[in-house]
Amino acid sequence: MDMQPIKARSGNHNLENYEQTYNNFKWDETKKNFSWSETGKINIAYETIDKHAEDPATKDKAALIYSSPDREETLSFDQLKRKSNQFANVLKKHDIEKGDRVFLFMHRSPEFYAAFLGILKTGAIAGPLFEAFMEQAVRDRLEDSEAKMLITTPDLLERVPQSELPNLEKIILVGDSGSDEYISFEKEMEEASEEFDLEWVELEDGMLLHYTSGSTGKPKGVYHVHNAMIQHYQTGKWVLDLKDDDVYWCTADPGWVTGTSYGIFAPWLNGVTNVVRGGRFSPDDWYGTIAEKNVSVWYSAPTAFRKLLSAGEDAAQKHDLSSLRHILSVGEPLNPEVITWGLKAFDLRIHDTWWMTETGAMLICNYPSVDMRPGSMGKPFPGIEAAIVDNEGNELPANQMGNLAIKEGWPSMMRAVWNNPGKYESYFINGWYVSGDSAYKDEDGYFWFQGRLDDVINTSGERVGPFEVESKLIEHEAVAEAGVIGKPDPERGEIIKAFITLRDGYSESDELLEDIRQFVKNGLSAHAAPREIEIKDTIPKTRSGKIMRRLLKSWELGLPTGDTSTLEE
Ligand code: 6R9
Image 1 (cartoon, rainbow, N blue to C red):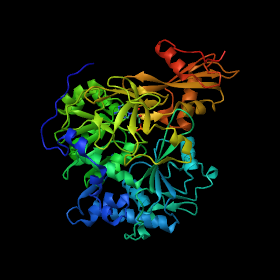
Image 2: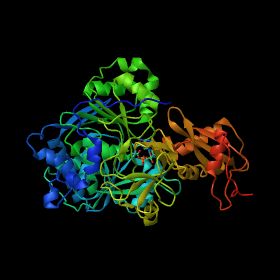
Image 3: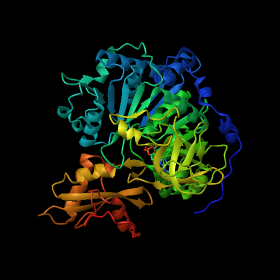
Image 4: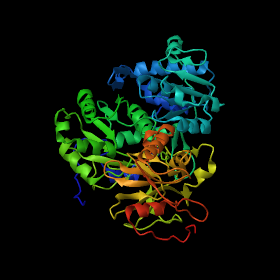
C-alpha cells in the first residue's frame, strides 16, 4: 500500500525543528537538566520521583493513576516517594545491597511501582518479569541473574521453583499475611519508615535487567545502567512530546522494556501524570480508559491498534476520545492501513518508533513536527547516528537493503549481556551496533523496516526465541524433534508455527496436538505456545545439526528454498 506523506500539524511541539536540532544536538545539553551534573551523585529513582516530590509545585501532582476493573488508586509524587522509601527500607532490613538482583513477578499494581522504585533507591538491580511466565521461564531468569530476592503474589508463587534456586534467599509476598517462610509486603511496609537515605551511585552503575529472546540459547539478560535516564528524558520530551499538563498512558507491561523505559522513566523524568491500566485488553476497556482518564498522549503497539481496528468504528464512537492529542507505536512494523484507520478514528497520526530491549530507548522515530511517510519508522533521534551496513560494517548507499546499525555510544545502550561477554561483543561490527533487523534508508533519510535477519519471532509485539520453544516441545513425551518458525498473520504480525516429529508409539490426533500446545503454554508462557503444529517425518537440519528454520519457512510460505547445500543427507 503506497501512501502520500502525511503532513505535520503546525502547533506547539517540544521539538520544532528536527533537522536543525539533529545537526547541532549534543547529549551533554540534556545532562544540564539533572542535579547530578553539578554534584556527580545520581540515582534514576531520585530524578524520576523524589525530585518532583521535593518541588512544592509538583509535590501533590498525580504521578500514578492506577486503574483496573477492581481497583482505582491515585498516588502523588510525594506519596510515591514515601512508599518507595518505605520499600527501600524493607529491602535494607533484609540485607539487600547495591548491585544485588531483586526480581518482581507480579501484575501491575501501585505496589509494583513502589517496589520497583524502592529497589533502585537501594542501588540494587531490578528484574521485572511478565506475570504470564510459567515455571521454566521464571527459573531460567532467576537462575541466570542469581537473584537474591523476589517480590511476587500468592497466586504466582507456585511457578517459582524455589528448591532449584539456591541464590534466592527471600521472597516477599504482596497480599499475604506472611509466614515463617515468606515476608509479608504489607506488614513490613507498615513498620518501615517513610524516610530513606538514598544510595547515590555512579552513572555507569546497574539498575535494570530485562531478559529477551535471541535465535539461539536461553533468554539473555540485557543490563542497563542509571545513565540511560538521559535518553529516557530527552525522547520523552521530543518524541512523546510530553508537557506538564499531559495525562500519559503507555499500555506496555513493565516485563517488557517499553513498560519500564516508557511506562516508568520517560513520563516521570518529565514530571508527567502516568496512567497504568491493569486487567485484560478489550476495546471497550481501552477506549474507556482514554475517555475516563482524559489521556492526551498514548503509546501502544500495532497489535493493539489492529485489534481496535477490527472491533470497528462503533466501539470507538461510544467514547469521548477528544482528550487525545498524540499517539505513538512500537514493537512491530506499523502498517499503513493502521495509520489510515488512526486518521479516521482519532483525527491524529500514529507515530511509529523503532528501538529494542538492547538499545534501552527510542532510536528511530516519527516526530510531531516532521512529515510522515506511512510505513517508515522515521528518522534517527538527535544524537543518534543510524545507517544501513553490510556484513563487514561498511555503510551502504540509499535504497539498498542491509543491516540496520547504530554508531556505538548512546546513553541508554545496554552495558552488558549478563554473564555472557561474548554475546555482548557479537552485536558489534566495525564500531556499529548491528540490530538484527534489515532495513533500507531512502534518499531523504527515512528508514524502512524490512524484517528480522535472524529467526526471532515477533508475535503480537513480543519477541519469542524459536530455540526456547523447540527445547520445551521436545520435553514433551511424544515429541522427538521440533523446528519453530514465525508465520505471517494479519492481526498478530506473526504466529508461532511448530513442525515436529513424533516418537515411536505416538500417532497424530487432535488431542495430542492440543496436549503439546498446552504443555508449552504451561511450561513457558501463553504467548510462546504454537498456534499451529504440523507433524513431519523429519525436520530439515544442516550437517552440523542445526535446524534449518529458513527452509521450514520457505516450505510453509511456498517460496523458493534457496541454497540447501548444507542440508543433512
Ligand atoms: C522496544 C521493543 C525489538 C525488535 C526489533 C524489531 C521489532 C520494534 C519496531 C519493530 C518494526 C518498529 N520492532 N519496533 N519492527 N517497526 N517500529 O520492541 O523491544 O521487544 O526488544 O523488540 O522488535 O524487530 O529488533 P524488543
